[in-house]
Image (cartoon, rainbow, N blue to C red):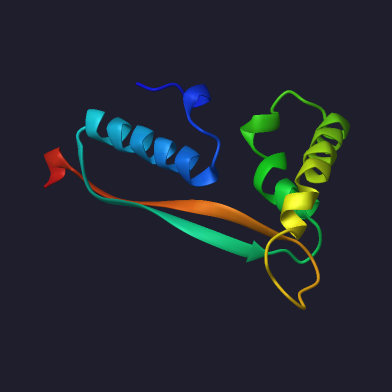
Amino acid sequence: MESYSKVQTHPLRVCAFYADVVKKLLISEGFEVVNISLVPRPTLLAGDISGWLRLFAKNTTFFQGIDSDETDVILGEVADACEVDAKDMDRTAIDGQMVMYVRLRVLAKHLSRV
């Protein structure tokens, strides 16, 4: 299997790689994948990107073992790095930042339960 680090970093290519990994995992566990799709989700943020990052990352296992103050520093650095792109999306007369995330939708059925 192709390693994640070798995938080109365009978001949809990374997501397509991830979708393929999920599909193979489901098949290996006895599922038939009926449909798998990527759904781009441009999202206007109420403030800057740091709130969105905290919502999706701070209380996950991603930061397990890292104290809260250090987590805040890391999220602040990520927010600073993302700020240019978050403000660069084409949206006239909209104040704020926008992010693009991609939802992975899967419909699968377990073959032993069919």
